[in-house]
Image (cartoon, rainbow, N blue to C red; front, side, top):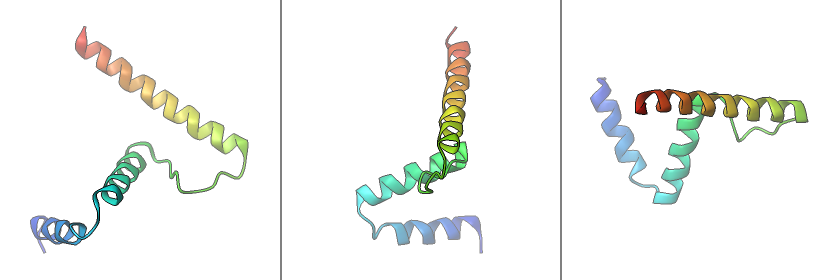
Length: 72
């Protein structure tokens, strides 16, 4: 099956969901793929939470620096 056929089938399946569900799913999937942090998992310790937040901060800072270089 080609990629286009697979995408078409997925789009058809997704059309059954409401906009809010699709927005949440897209946001979750995009952030999980980009940052690798699964927000649906419970952190067992404050250290795990701090680590995830630190990673998000650093990634955001780096993205901001890259954007600033493009704007300069």
